[in-house]
Image (spheres, rainbow, N blue to C red):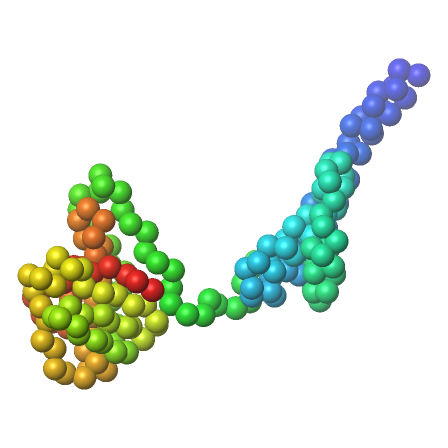
Length: 188
């Protein structure tokens, strides 16, 4: 009798682990279905919908119906889970704005743009605004423009720039092989 009670207790203790593994597998299978979505908001809603099996098992409030329907509208993957989950599409437009270093970072030097061609440039009162081929837009700081006005004459498509993070959260732009750097800030 004692052996029967111990066996039943052990079986009961293992049952939630098996159910938990099944719910987790269901969530992972759902998340792989969401990977085809390229819009970040839709992907997140699909992800929340995919978590529904585990939410139900833990007694949490259910995901909104719209999130569950978004998941259900995605095609099912094969029965085997893929080895890796990859994002379906790449971001369009310029890359995200650079993160400014803290005031305590005195020296940095991280290169953000390396020898990239210009799409266009505009000069107003000696200060420039450059647009890179990937859509980034940088402008010369007012303080730097007062000290170093530019007088570029060559066409934009023949110019290449490098931009690196400078000291104290600033950014430096160098045109081609010039030894001169300009203080800039990104505006888009």
